[in-house]
Every structure is written in structure tokens, then in C-alpha cells.
Image (cartoon, rainbow, N blue to C red; front, side, top):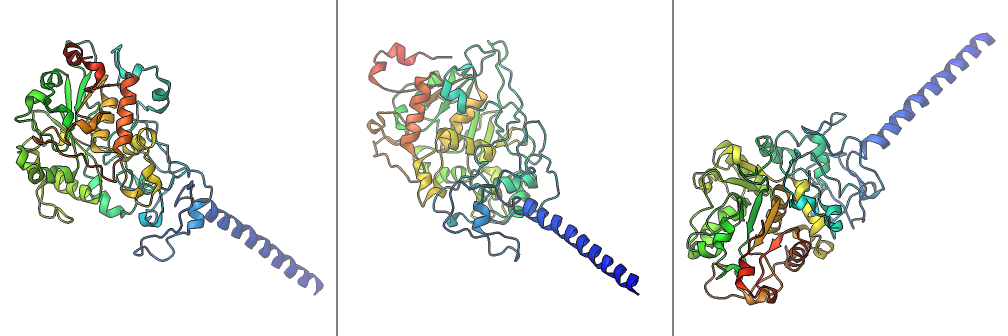
Length: 444
């Protein structure tokens, strides 16, 4: 009888030990896997952090968990190889972060980590900006930063990583299915964007043309058109202004807003349509949800189904030159990299941080710096900006207006710095350029 009781006691003890051993790894796995999968370390604590109220109960976590010092999870990582990123385990979308819950820009421990898998562009150009010896530029410049988004490089791991960043730098505030419907239509683009001209010296020379009033009366048109490639953005009016701004366009950068608003906002200045040179390449900045609505209609060749551009036909806005093989969508890593390393405005520390971003002109200029050997910038803000009108196509000088979503003065200083360090050449009308011969000299 005693032996029977002893066996029962041993059995109960063994069962208890097994239960503890089974329980501990499960709790351990929850603490190690589930919570870090939602977020990385945040460098400052939000005053509150809420998730989309439409999320299922239990599929969220507290501000304390989000603010803890958690390193980047293994499966939320960047890819140093060509091809799509592959997660380690099956995943689901993280809870939607709400921008209004943060008093200023939240900075995660993976804020300055980017995909660097763009196909390496071999250059034989001795004077390429990539050969710059400027220490600050070399430290910040990533020659192989991923430039374009397409259907093969945004999987669930990437979605969760990018969902920590507000638009246009990520998917914060967006629902997975709403965005990915469009993203899964974006074909893998042909890279590099530009190639050296046959018979040349191997250098890719580019002009980037902004709309600043400094170009009015500049007579820079022939000089601009003499480059291998010409970049323009937004309301790029050339007809009637060729003497000052040239007539060629090789790459046109836009958002859904800029391409739809230009026809009526700039009609009085002669705007007809976007540049439509034969073989032109169109590059889109995915600024917000309306841009993903636009992309879905554009890539399907249909009317837009929802959003502010509902029932519009996007392809009609490209003046007959839209071609899927010549259409590119900038990647959020590239856009965030431009902001973080070159144009990080103090406005990001203010309550209106979520609307603060570089201008379309800034994104275009940095795209050129990553695809060209020599870059010359025209129509960008200079020290004596107050002497000129807002835009080169304005016949009557108008006062320049600064809007809260862009840090114009910071961008001005960046262009000046890049000019002084010979990364690019900025067209300026200053006292140092008194002789027309020197002013008209093109550095290629």
C-alpha cells in the first residue's frame, strides 16, 4: 500500500515538473517573438499611442511596450542582396499606428537602416560625384540605396518595418490590404534609370530644373538642353519659356496631386500637359493613400475606384507617353534617407511633424545625384531668393510664400553646401558671377 502511494506521489511530482517546463518556453516565446514583432525601440516616448479602433481586440500593444529598448527583430531586416526580402516566419500585419498619437517625429532604433540592394552602377567617369573626397558627403551618401518600390520587394516583413514611418516615408496609418492592392501591381523597373550616351566619355550628365523665379530672363535654355538628360518636376512648363528653361525632359517626377492640379492651377501660364518627350521616364512619389489609389487605376488602365480622384482615368494625364516599362515609383527607404541624412528639419520636433517633408524638387535632385555622374541644378532657391518671383513663368513679381510642410531655408543651405563642395553645380546670380562667359560655362 505504501509503495502504491509512493508511486502516485512520484507521478504527481513528474507531472508538475513537465507542466512547468512546458509553460516556461511558451511564455518565453511570447516575450521574445510576439511583442518585438510589433515594433522596435523608439527614441522618444509618445505621450499616448493608440491603434486603429478597427483592429481586433487583443491585436495591439501598449505605449510602454513600444517604447522599450527592443532591437530590430531578426525578420524585420534590410536586404543587401538583389531580389525580394524573405521573412523567417509567417507574419501578419502589425497594428496600425496613429500619427496623431505622437507629439513629434518618433525615431526608432532602425530609423537610419535602409535597403541597399540597387544594382551597382559601374562608371568610368573620372569626374563622377561618386568619387568625391568630401568627408561629410561620403559619410552620408549611400550609392546603392534602394531607389524604387515594386511588387517583389514589399513582403509582410517589409510592410511591418515601414509601417513605423509616416507617409511618404512609410505606411504608418495605412491598412495593409488597402495599399498592397496597388503595390502588387507595380512591375520591377529597369535599372539603372539612365545610361551613358553612346560614343561619349562614359559620364552621365544631368540638369535638374526647378521652377524658381531666378530662371526668368536667365537665358539658360540651351545650356540646360545640352545635358545628356534633363529632370523636371511638378508644373514643368516649357512651351514659351524655352530660352530660359530649355525644352527637353528626360525624367519627370510627380505626385498624384501635382499631375492633377497643374492643369487648372497653371492654365493661365500656358500649361497644357506634363512633359511628353518620346521615351520619357515618369517617376512617382507615393505621397499618400490617394497616390496608391492613383497607381491602381494607372497600372490597371481603369478608372480610379475610390478616394479623391474617384472615376478619373490616370493614363489620360500622361499625354500619350505612359508606358509601364518607363514608369517608376520611389521607395520609402530612399525618401526617408533623403530626409534623415540631408534635410532633417527642426519642424519634425513640432506638433505638425507629420506634414513636414522635403520638397518634390529636393527628392528629384537627390534622385539625380544617385543616377548621374554630374549634376547641374537650375531654378532652385539661392541666397538672393528675395530678388525673384516665386516661379519663372510669372510675368509680375510676386512675394515668395513659405509653407509649413517644407523647410525651404534648410534646403537652400543644403544646395549651397553641395555646390561649395563640388558635388553639384547650382545656378546662382551672385556677385561672384559677374562675367557672362563664366556664368554660361557648363561644367560637365
